Amino acid sequence: MCSPSYRARSPQGTALHAIVLDHHERFGSVYDEQFAARYGPWRRAVEDTFVRYLECGNYANGCLRVACTNRDCGYDVFVPFSCKCAICPSCAQRRSIEFGDFVDAEILEDVPYRHVVFTIPKILRTAVLQDRTLLLDLSHCAWRTLVRGLRVALGDKKAVPGAVLSRATAGDLGNGHPHLHSIVSCGAWSDGGRGSFSLWPAHLRSEDLEQLFRRKVLSLLVRRGRLAPSTAERLMQWNPTGFSVWLGDPIHPYEVESRQRLARYICKSPIALHRMSYDAATCQVTYTSVSQGRSRTVSALDFMADLSVHVPNPREHGVSYLGRCSNRSRGARRRADEDPAARGAPAPSVSRKAFRRSWAQLLKRVWQIDVTLCPRCASELKILSAVVNSKSCHRLIDHLGLPRARAPNPHECLPMPGAQLRLPFTLIRPQDAPLAVVAVQPEDERDPLVNDDWPSDAPFSDD
Image (cartoon, rainbow, N blue to C red; front, side, top):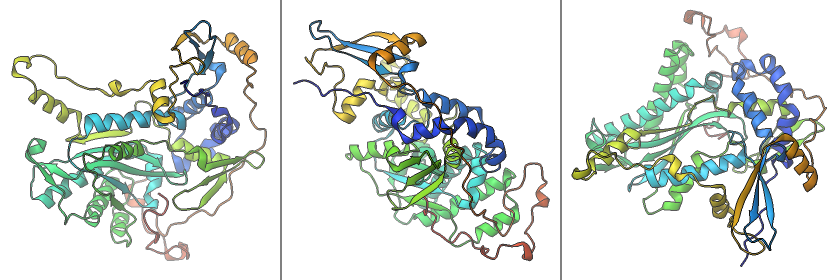
């Protein structure tokens, strides 16, 4: 039986590609004036990522020629190169599948795990969007919260859990929403992670972890000079707090698919193509929330600003392996399990690279298509050559009758007008201002529509 025919994906036909093509140059020119105050200084990595994404799946930037080994068949196909950048949904799907296999097979042990989500109030998210180093600091606060909570609940000062923690920046509507996803062991190991495993105590609730997480985050922002001590005290009295620690149901070791699906979820793409639409005439983007049944319409430039939040800096890692899941702990256990006769030999290790699936393996797993077999005669396919020369690529496009890349949309795009939120007090201290300058605004300068207990909505309202 012949394999189903492979059809190369076409990012050029998606709304995301059209938005980036039409507006990435203008976005870079107006960023400092319109968006730097909210999203921080301009980063070169953002422009490089946009340019790389426009080259994804474009035959003009190179491709592979794959042909059937049966000479009588004559079947061949050209496969364009991918971009592997952070905002590309197709490339992110590949990383997500590989990550799910790696975490389930190499990181997680035969104990229950659960999904834990840490969120912060809307009023503090601007500080994190402006300074990406705070994302790593937030993950440290979340980890210390888990360790402290489990140690107190178990009554063991040396208990150590295991966690895989992912730093996310996208909300349910594609907006900039920094929060943390983690896969946490439902319990902890005694003796510094080397002893027996104790299950998660029933009396350790999410409310207890939320209070501890709130104190650690506010203390962090005060130490970093991003929050006045008086403001931190006011935030400690908010009800609801705006902070949240959500605990998922335990996932047992025999639920392999659930563990892999959870690992793929915490490493998923920040943008979903099927949830967005783009009106090139008005330069407006509509992003729909599947879980909440509502949508958000913004200008293309505003959407590009939200998209830039999801671009990491060079050599910035988005996932941390902590406690029992850390590389050090896993290496120590491998060395302890070695045969005494082979103790001098290096410990066996399964790296992330070992779980890197090929393009053909991923297509077979996701779409049930074996692209290593010819769809005509079921013979084996092989790579004949790589086309990377620019002139050769354009001749190939003309020969195959493929459309050339279109020019950017000439329509003028302006940010959509919106009400600017005024807070009843100054929250984030300017970098060049002394801490003593931050103070509560006079009563007559307060916005009557915003009270001291803002926000009053649920912490998970936009996640």
